[in-house]
Length: 280
Image 1 (cartoon, rainbow, N blue to C red):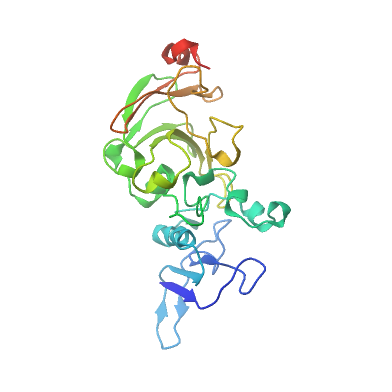
Image 2: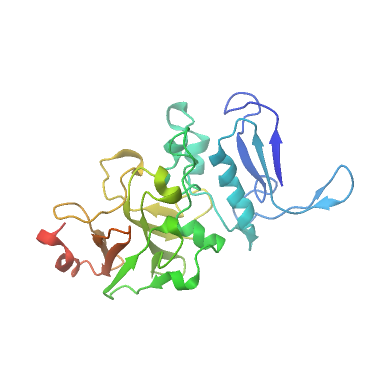
């Protein structure tokens, strides 16, 4: 159910909330295992216990789609299947009092609509990352390759937005922690993204909704807003992801003409063997 409130609103003016997931969401809360699909009595009789989102008439399509994904995911064991990836605390107390999505999308940036509702207000919203797609069941098991820490394996990843072929490499680290590696190219829905390349997501599902469940590793920390987070092939560039604690390193090896990306998953000690000029 999608309810549109006939009002123009924004934080601090009018109704206040531009869009939200009411069910599962604000009807029950979303933290500490409280998320649920509540049953609501209808004015004309009967009840409704399905997903419901509410938006003002001036909501960006990104606001609506973001909350639609909450609704599509539903609830499992008191948790929303599709969580918020932006920071609840920064949204509640925005820096400088400025309410702008990129200011609280500090963990995943524009690489998932559950983190940042739009890249530019005049553009379509960014698509979901492999994490949210997996939560929704949009990536088939055969489209995910798994490699254990300590192993060395090469893969060819297809563009995530294309939806076909091998889309994700997963490195399990513990019951709740893993790495997800994906190929983001400016094709299909990903055309709105600020960059392209190999994106590494550090996942910890034990963290609460609205926190750093997913962190995008940042290949270029000097660029604000995780705008240049992907790692790209090329000698002399900061192009390898290293996680010494996990014993994992990942690097893109070559970008193919069809948009596919060859990558290697190995150890921090072995990664230099795959980087032209010694890499960094």
